Figure (cartoon, one colour):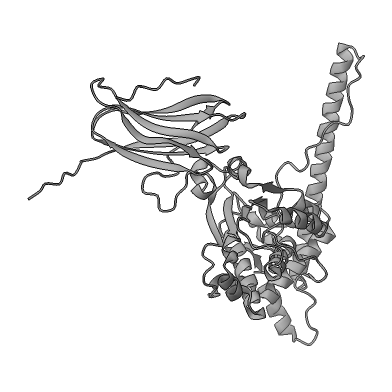
Length: 461
């Protein structure tokens, strides 16, 4: 019999540098305007003076914050007026031709009143809830400078007309073999859609040549990337809800810097998104980035806006799971990144919440899973954040006369997620034991469930 284990302590793009990057890039996080008091308390102040100064500082902070909010409101009102005038005056898309008849001019004005961007009416007087949200994105991207935001909006509308972006979702671009390059998979902790891009498949030379082998194919790829951005936007809610996405770019096995076509198109897509999709990317997380990418990112940063480059998040291979779990629940993170989400999962759903176990450095700890009765199949999921621990799985029956069962002998876990299941004919406990002989703590995320099972017996005839 196996002994019960003893456990220890429980636009114009010419002239810009062409570097490999994510196709999405412009985003921001909340609390951009948190103001701190410029005054500090004197060390020799008495208690009354300290209290008085604290009150004054608080009042100054509130006044500065109110002034900033007033400035933002004023900028929005000015922007609304400019957009309203440009639409009603028929020049939001450029100056109208003088050669058209008066009736044609009136018809164009009536058509322009219905102009929308990502399904949101642009005419402020229509009173749509999403109009101000949309206009604020352009204002934020241009630091609340009304004239700059207005020019950005006009350039965006002009580019969309020339690129035929409003039709792109209906197009069958016929780009085959790229099913593993992009996907939109679940949401982060705040409800932002997660848009994954992986450049690893382009290491296949045949796929690379098929995708980038001619100018026509490269232009088709660019439209395909813009189509993916538009698909992500369809999952946003500009009225009252989540109005930005999270982009995750995986550079594992990505072709190197010598593959200039991919670098060029990736850079062009980044610039397109920065100039025409303001504030729609809440985070841009780059994982498994090789050394050459960091070098190119430094060189490329001078071509990016401050709001784009200041919030890039990078994670090396050993930190991928830890970084992503800061923003994504483990049940929503795919298993290839150290989470517990599996496609077409018949065992668990996102509603099956995850528990956590901390394994301190140089200790042994365990998870205890109760088997309350016989005739159950137990299923369990687990992942270790931090890599490199030893683990084993063992069943200890409640009946001391029964034999213990070694389900999984001791093995090393290095970043992969584990799922196992076992049928039990009697009640007892499953012990999943972890040995952490590292100098840092390790974090285990796990879940389990029981399924009543009728065993199937085979009889010889």
